[in-house]
Length: 213
Image (cartoon, rainbow, N blue to C red):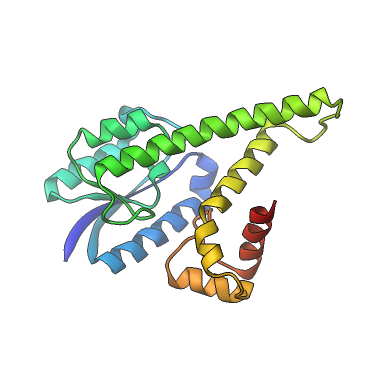
């Protein structure tokens, strides 16, 4: 059986204490390892008080890199953003010559693809930020009192729509099935929800509503 090192990360101490983010990532990694025939030698958990794209502020990632070199094994993460949301940081990690595997993208995603996905994600964040600013400016121009509508709320809504849009091809394929049946099928295919959890009928309906907006 092939060996690999697992790495999970959450960006706030609160998420770390709750364990929810880490548990979801760990579950995804275990499923991936079982499906692809990997033995996870060790899991390194990083809990940050803020997003950091400096390797010297990621002691657990450093430790994972050292152990990966010792075992000549890849490091597996659940999603690319668990490594970083910054394409330059991703590039720096690739320079260590330690293979990284992103469970969400599949075992065959090579370094070039990881760079590409990181660059696309970075561009998407910039576009979401710009759409948020444009939406607020438009509301103000119309004389609308924003009240509870703020940049953070609009950004969250745009991100939710973007995550739903990424699932559109699969939802189109399963069109006509009940929400419960779709949830079961998505779980069977090991496709996680946008928040990295198992599917439920209500989650399916929520995504479907966002795809109609």
